[in-house]
Length: 308
Image 1 (tube, rainbow, N blue to C red):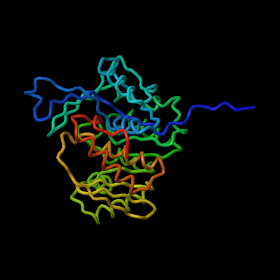
Image 2 (cartoon, rainbow, N blue to C red; image 1 turned 180 degrees about the horizontal axis):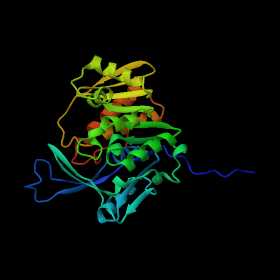
Image 3 (cartoon, helix red, strand yellow; image 1 turned 120 degrees about the vertical axis):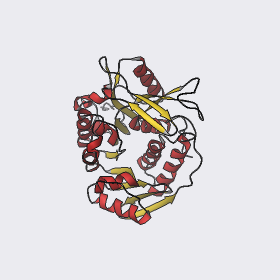
Image 4 (cartoon, rainbow, N blue to C red; image 1 turned 60 degrees about the horizontal axis):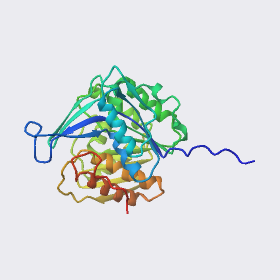
């Protein structure tokens, strides 16, 4: 008798907030532009877009307002191939908003639907079956419910637990961001981070770092739990795994919009590692993906559909 074959497990489940993003055309400003482009923006969903384009099975868990902004996000992310079945719609709270210019980004997310995420939003989500889960520090900072849900996701996972600290100012928990985000870091297997924020997480403050300091920070972080640590700096990216430190230089190019580059970097790195590729190949792919995204006024439009 042939057994019933269930659905394939997800390659990645991600939890976090996505906002509608408004931006002027390149070279213009919010004040003078005759029109604005409309996009979506969210650290976890940006990474999901990248992985979906590369052929991975991904799902995004969140809340959106029962508004047209939420409708747009559901339709756009769904069209990318992301499973949206665990996105709840909130009739009482709005979808968050981002206003984006080249030199600054402003968020309007206080009281947003996603700020009310709770561990209950994980009910019936097959977290233990997923090959990997992803949550960033933004989720830890937008509200106590999202913070608790992020911890619940990491605690329930049996696959690779991936965390990007993504430290941010101006959010509900920003004044306690080190303590709140550190609880995610301590539960992670893969830590994908910037050098400055890693310094802040470990020492409570950020300061200038160099190559040898990057490695020292990574080794200190590894003592707290993560088994693979990737550190992004201005001119290099590095990784620590199995006690071996690897570094790849970055050649910075002129960019149209750098927002979302870190999320695209994460998607490229995760894609190669989920396919069993080497850390060196993962770092190079991550750099290519991050660079590609900076070519357009969008967090995801420039993300490639192949790593070849």
